[in-house]
Amino acid sequence: AYLSADKFTTGEENWYAYTWNDKGNKWVKVENGTANDLFENVIFARLNKSAATPAWDAVWNQTEDLKTVNGGTYTITGWDNGSDGKMGGQWSQPATQGTTAATTAATTAAPTTTQDTTMSVKLDLTAVSSMSGQWRVYTWNDGEQTGRWSYIYNSRATVGDNFLLAHVKDHSSEMNWNSVDVQTVDVVSVNNATYYVLNETDGNGKYKVSTVAPTTTAATTAAPTTTEATTAATTAADGMTATLSAKAYTTGTEKWYAYTWNDKGNKWVALDNMKATGLLENVIFARVESGKQAAWDNVWNQTEDLKTVNGGTYTITGWDNGANGKMGGKWEASTVETTVAPTTAAPTTTEATTAAPTTTEATTAATTAASGKTATLSAAQYTTGDEVWYAYTWNDKDSKWVEIGANNKFTGLYDKVIFARVEKGKQANWNNVWNQTEDLTTVDGGTFQVTSWNNGNGKLGGNW
Image 1 (cartoon, rainbow, N blue to C red):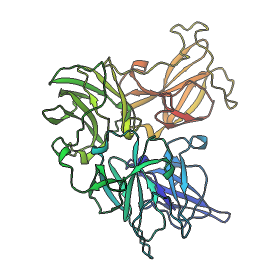
Image 2: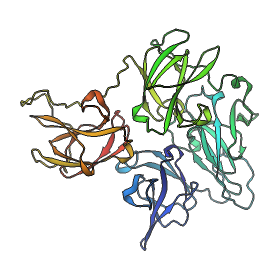
Image 3: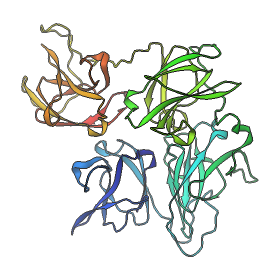
Image 4: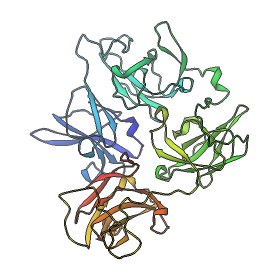
């Protein structure tokens, strides 16, 4: 089976398939997107790269239990949109003999032999960046009756012998031909080549693709004219300053830059203490591989085109919730990064009060012990070393902060708890919180596992 998970691959992990039947089980490493010799059932799992051998203790994320589709492609569609908060996805079954995947699918002739080929290509979508929605890759090897879908990640894609790009209006759409509105021509793959999608079509209405950069975009280093309008943006010409708030998306393996431009020129500006100076009218904040030159080939993640807000702070809110799958965010009036305190926060006094309402979360697993409860936090994937984890815990009479202890345990907890990621070296208070969970009912002796940066409400997702 094939695994399509480019969008959920950061380079810090190894992908494995845990596979089993009624006679046995084993771990199979996914190599170049392929898992061989699988049994009847399979789970695709994202493991800590430093783990010596595959084991459940090293698993960061996993799919639910799946029935293996021989020759099929399983495409991961979300960090936690599957059952029980696991990675969601779907199978793309191989086409049966004598049929094609879709009327608009690849037209490159398929010879009678099959060769399993995997290549990496760079994709430049600047010329068509004004199109709302998202481009995706459909790829196939010579000799295959059908192909498989893949996301574009960091402007790169893993492809077979041939590929095309298909556009969907809604980036959350399932990867299938029913979601496609337009597509490119078929392309023969060359490993590590750069392909430019042109803003022109052939006689069949398919967008052309070239290995030569269009002359209209070369002079501006792929910085299109921004389409974002905001009343907060100043009209100052040059020398503007802005701050980037992206601590939750900074792992220490990158360097943040601002790519800034106007109608007279462009430049890269390295952020110093997350502040960029000398900015022009427009800006893109970009996460560049540490130690590499500031250039589009070295960009891991980026925002969309923005109007520079002089003296403002741009806060990153997601890895890919912006236009065209780019990092989402918003301009803030204040340069102070804050996290909203819990909706059931206890009062500043220790006297009994009704100001701390009962949390709406209910669980039969929670114990009814008054205080002195113990819980463990499982958040290795969301720990970079720049933070200290705390538990903010309270009942109807008291509240306190509890620092994480040995073996990731918290002791002395009350009935309610919020697990919070606090900037290292800072006091535990809401002004210093980078990320937090929802209000939770403490499960005495339980383990709370963090499963996502954003549960849809802007807080850390997870479950007991």
